[in-house]
Length: 102
Image (tube, rainbow, N blue to C red; front, side, top):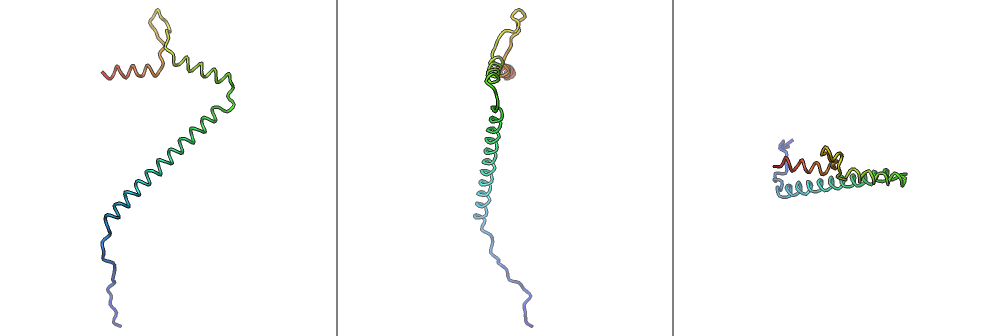
């Protein structure tokens, strides 16, 4: 029964360059895949929301929405005697931003 109890195995070291490039390429592939999926999801969601918002919207409602948007984005006097002005929110936010940036 002359058998040896030693088990022979592969003693070579892994190629670190190949392993490193494999990790980098896998990371890039994963990043591109996730970014593509996110882009696809957002465009699909936006398209679906736009479709739902415009389905069955009458001409009067669309005109009313445009008129409302015009009123909300216009700058006008609320009370000129008291010095009160109606300011669109975007303009007001920019004004506050410039005041606090000083």
